Amino acid sequence: MNDRVLVCRYPLVTVYLPTFNRVDLLRRAVDSVRNQSFQNFELIVVDDNSSDSTVDYLKSLTATDKRIRWLCNSVNSGACVSRNKAINEARGEFITGLDDDDYLAPNHLESLLSAWRRRNEGIIAIYPETIRVFKDGEKRAAPKLGQCVFDDLLCTNWIGNQVFVPTDALRKIGGFDERFPAWQDYECWYRLLKVTGEKAVCSRSYTYYLDASHDHARISSSSVQRIYDAWSLFCSAHDLSSKEAEIVKLMLASYGIKDIDLRFLVHKILRMPHRKNFKHALLIFVKHFNLM
Image 1: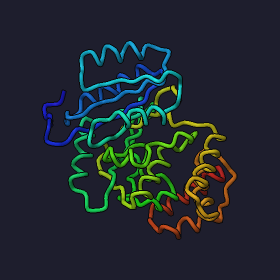
Image 2: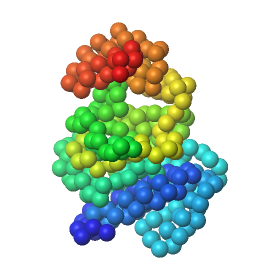
Image 3: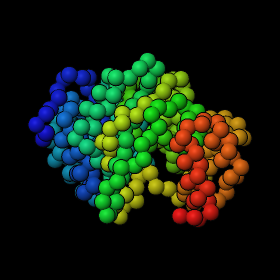
Image 4: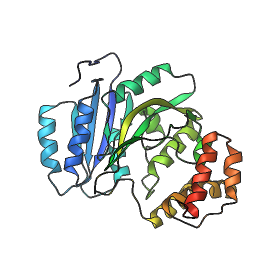
């Protein structure tokens, strides 16, 4: 445990953690929550009907740490169902998430709460900077956009896979859309910002470790067809114009999908002229022609 421990200075924060058949990685994720400098949290782990020793681990864990609860899906239902189950059960005024193959820096919750306290009017969510973990070491991801409105997300998911948000706000939009075969986080953040008309801002703290070093499939990994289906559903669910749909479709290049119209790179850059948009557009061009 860290020497510096914050208790009761802030409202209760819920952390949701879906898991499936990765008990060793789950232990690391859970430990990273338990070792937070901010200790006024509850952790809700939702087991998606695992067949390994996950249930035994969770039983022993919750028997000794009352801040942790666990739920179990009767059938394997996917990450969105698991997340929504935790959101509905959350007692915290604020909520954030963690994937079972990722982990948190000890000051993660503290930094998110600090950013929330510093926020300006019209801010609904905070998102962290990311450290990527590879087999040969760690690397800080490029700094994210400082703030986003929903339209900014048509270019790419500047936010990433987790936000810190009032629990009621996430409940009011219905949580994660369980129809989506991929892009669930991206679609949820887009809908959150669109419905509320507010912004999300970056904490500017590198506190979320996204692990790509293990041999398990990531919760967020999907086949090409699933990505294509998610794009199609995203466009129809949000009634995008044909131009907006083509701009969003440019993201498919990151998955090796060639069915994109490069003419819309210009529209992408001009629509939201952030410097990062140009860099992202150039990366799409490079990947499309296999120049990397």
